[in-house]
Length: 255
Image (tube, rainbow, N blue to C red; front, side, top):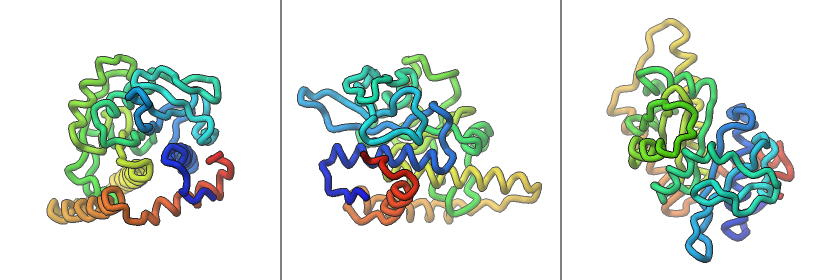
């Protein structure tokens, strides 16, 4: 099991590979589509570089070693696997990374529950503790078609603002993390929130929404807990548990 006592780039590659594997383990992937990207330290000449999955590989085939290094346009810098990347798929990610330097990781999913909630006017409701984390903290971007138009990047960034969670209308979800760990935890909790909402509303009974003050209080509790880990370096037992799960299910992912 990797113990984290590695150089920052190796640790980032390991964490990103773990994120891909976990999303696959949880059934949150979409074949070879969607991406999780991570921002590398700038190159020796100030180059802005990112890690992305090789084109055509399923999430459960991604390893730390086969991740591709690309620049902000999606052009390949280093490609151990030799398949390149889906440059069009990097459109959303490049826009966010270039505008939001606090975003080490950008995670995009097309889950059934996430797409369902993104497809209703009300979006995510504060129905439970999971969804309360996102109370009044979700941005929205209207669907414009498959994200091939680079001009859409400016609109994505404008709609996102300073938030870390976005519902891409009729499309899916977008999560930003100050670390891979934070982005993954947002993704897990948002997926649970969306699943719970779909389940609750399908019963035909009357949903009970949390009062705004209670939902806001809960969101603040989550935010303070995450800040302690991201800003103060407090231990993150949840991420450690996630890494143990991935290692048990997918030995060799960090190679």
